[in-house]
Length: 288
Image 1 (cartoon, rainbow, N blue to C red):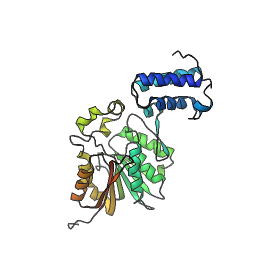
Image 2: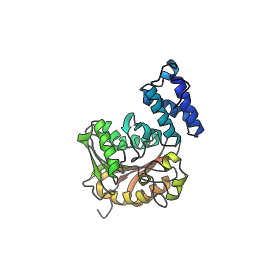
Image 3: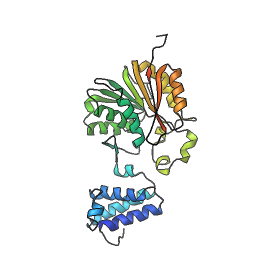
Image 4: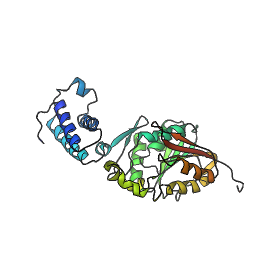
């Protein structure tokens, strides 16, 4: 790959131009982050040391990553990492990339989390939700469940990086099939996009994130129904169930929870003012 020169600023401008031509959203940010990733620099380098010479091999590596990002491969798949709840998580094409909206689920769950509780994370993916809860709590333990063994390998790696291996177990299971015991708190960010809506998503999501973690079947509510239906058998009396939801699913998921006997069902909004989390606690049915 030919550059006009190998100064930091010039290499960055090359990346911006290529990503802009490919119509990549936030192309300037991605060009900078990829250059920092390759060179081991930070955001101040572009401002303070724009004339810094970039090693030829680093420049070639950068050009290769820019070409891949131009094909709309997600930035996080190129760097293999994503920040979430102030922590850094490993990611791959086998897990959903942790998003800021999902932090709302963690923040709400932490309000109910007390010392020594047992937490279940259904559809755990990278493990970012469960591991964040355990990292910011005392003496809590957790189980993360996923139908994808490849996703669980990523979650286990993240547990190791956060030195939480002794407090967490990851289970390969189709929802509750292989889950044992009861929990004080169940959290889940299940697949919730209606099948026909997936083709309308950005190419980064549609073409590169796992369809298994996106597709909520025809109406997007399949996994909510299944988890709500079975969750009562795995929650302690008074235990809480919390979901991340799509912006238009608050009423539907709330009603499903109420019908199943959950109490004080509440919808919480994200930073954009959109419905994002539903919570409720396990009430006692007359049959129990």
